[in-house]
Image 1: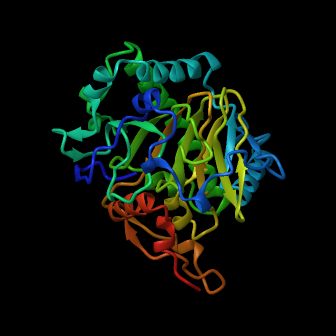
Image 2: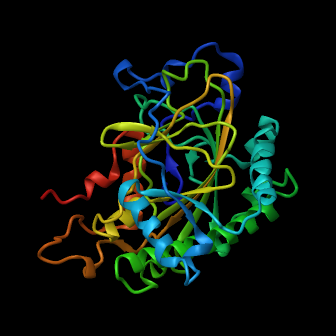
Length: 359
């Protein structure tokens, strides 16, 4: 994620969806050094990621048990699978349908929403690829479409597709429903840490920004030589991911091992971001994850990134620090961290490592 301001670029990368139609092998810019190439298969998780029923979190008769599941998931994996979120399977199908239909549009139609201003400057919002800042940068086998969805006053509706016709209505409703999930989860995270119930909610005030990212991973002729999305952690407070339930590809790193994240139909994946790791003084971890590609099938996902006001500082909660639990992260302004994560993502390193205080 970045702050949405136009940036100078090295070169406009090609649209992968168009590229794959005419190549037998990935171009050199996408191919990883042999020592960095992914083991596409990944490993099965030694224990299932807990499935948390969000409807039980707000039910006084079941909240204690469900909160314990939530805490266990975040302490062990930094993420969980959410059910009981109130969204009908038919509605989630609509969310994936409008995403798929957008990517099926002719290239000239999609490029009306390009993330290049006047064809020269990169901005986060719009259709295209992530920013290229170096000629040596290894590119990801992915096209993406970014939109600011919150606050509503910051929506640039000229960037919202008119095709398919239902795109705007579906995404407005999905944004509202995901906000309900985010608020509920943040309230419970504060309870786990014995903080005021609104502590994390207040971090996402009226100036906080929510981005929606629509990912498209075309089939890849050499999936063992490229990344769909290189290893990274999110800059966010919290992230909600809706994954195409027909093709796997998301993998999570723990103790040096890459694990396949299982697909549970109609479940949403909720993971912690770097801002949450910092604010919790390391109690909640921001998981490192990546996406591998498939030799035969395309894959899609819809991701909601919840980020603080760019002018607010990210720092550990004072209530979580004492002699036994010293400060583990330095203070950094949100907009500066977003800039840092753009640089480290391009290099294949982690921004969170730049703010850790070595003990």
